[in-house]
Length: 552
Image (cartoon, rainbow, N blue to C red; front, side, top):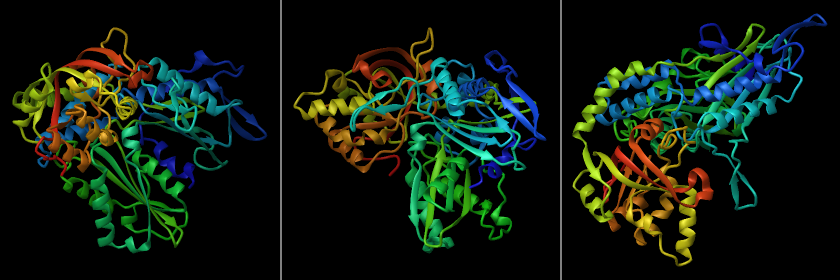
């Protein structure tokens, strides 16, 4: 896979808007930050490694607070789409308000500020005189340390023990070369991606056979797999399907690029293709069909409707005749990726939309109307009273939660399960309050808490029955669909699973959380057990005490 050729269309004039960055303050080389020299009849671009540090820092700062205009406009279009459900519109309006808040540069748009991924293409005529990967990682570490982001990377100390690295390193850095005369040979080009766990976990790979290469079989296969993606990756999605590839690794690399929008300018197979062994092609006809499958699923933008996906990309590649690799993946509502280039005329970073506030005139009335029809649920009372109040309303109903929640996610659940297995009871905080599956980003100065959206509910599904048996988890709040086992446990024990909007972490932190304190497992950092007080936190009933499920 020739990355230089594949990504070249992203850097053609007009493909993206770029802003120039100023790395001069960090330069330590005698030639300055960027210099052009003539060497043996060739033009050589010399780049101080400090430029790479600054570029990575600004890239990961920007993608965690800002969005492309086109992405914001796709959300806004849901508000006017006749086929959108009321819940679709509510989610889209909340995401637009969240974007306006995050654009202020205090609360990142999502609490899971992600794994930092850097894909770089270094021209043969580019010299840095340093360790490029180290410089890029220094920029990543600086962004995560200074910008209220969250450290999500854990490293093993044994087969079963891990600890947070507290730097968000390691980053994934993949550097390729562009030969002389090839596109970008005189530049250093980058695609920066921040990939959260929710959308990363919605990457699916299948080794199929040529029996799937007919219209009926492929459509049936994609219909099933798209529905299985569910909502845990924070839709509306940018959805991609890649068919073919010389290996599983090549297929999945193309999927990563496709979900980031980096393959949008490939030739269209629907317009007629040739059997070029090097060709990587889009198929716009199948893209329309895949988008229809996503709309027809009824899953919608998290709580029912037609807006599961904003768009779709279907990529076709050459393959070994005995193999048919197929992958399906998404970029979530955060859609955090950015292009950059370093050329003789300077260092340039993709410029994002800094005025999403202009969409609030359309979004706020949607939120206000939904709030007027929502049911208010007080949480400052016994858990069984909360269950009785919820039981009066159907799945899909919007409720506004006010009162105490206990916050616990993966690591805390694992510790509580160990204590339960040893014969200890669940702590009273876990049986007396609803539980919110979440973990915050770093707290900005002077604020109650950092960005604080929900995490994926399914990862806690294995704990639900044992915890309910012990009197806990009777009301759960998270994002995404859940297993049939959770539905059955809620029916048996009289419990509920609620969903709040994935991808609206800045909005939740700023407008709905009024206090916070750690109550257990402080050593777990952002995964510590917390007690928070919320005010009018919007949530939808996903599973009720009668065994009804919104996603059944």
